[in-house]
Image 1 (tube, rainbow, N blue to C red):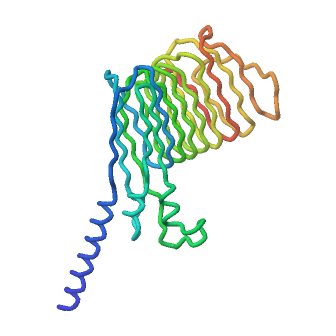
Image 2: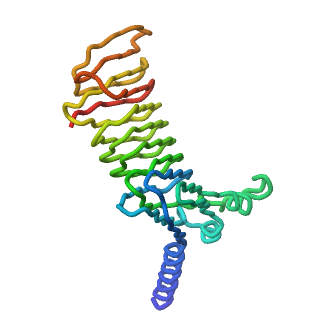
Image 3: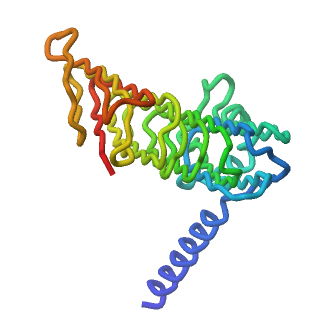
Length: 268
């Protein structure tokens, strides 16, 4: 009984130690500076989260939290080797998640001697505060992206990511492969374009406001709309659908395209 109790205690301590080590496998990178009201923020990342917040200051504040995705004996090294590249000026901010050192050090020469304990690339969680009129470009693989209260142009390209854009007063270009996106406009300004393959996009537009719809829905795609649309089937390509229609008298162009995905237009 004493041996069993002792063994259990040792196992408990080892497990606790492993959990503590795993919990400590993170680090943070911070940077801030002057940033103009019409500056451009560009983000190029792989996986984790991106959260864009707005404030009334002519400044940008960047916080990147790098943490291990799972645990192996090299988790901490991989977190340390993950680089956050930030090129900041008063009018432009370029941010990139760089895993080159992780791949070089942990995948062996040209990846030929990669071991079973190579584990996963670390997650990077961004929280960024910018002026409301910042122009935004996001290129992502499979992060969760959240953008709120921007009053300018937004461009997002993601593969298997999740996107949520709220209270946008501007234009949006959104391209997704798989994944899900939810977009809500406070005001539609300029042309917007949405394209998905094997994903879904919900677009909420202001009630009673006019726009021009241009939709190309492939034969494997799905399209739903709260708006009354005069369907102009210019070309019937084996059940595909092309729609060209002014809504509430017309206005800024909203272009939609999908083949194997789903797009919904909601009036809110």
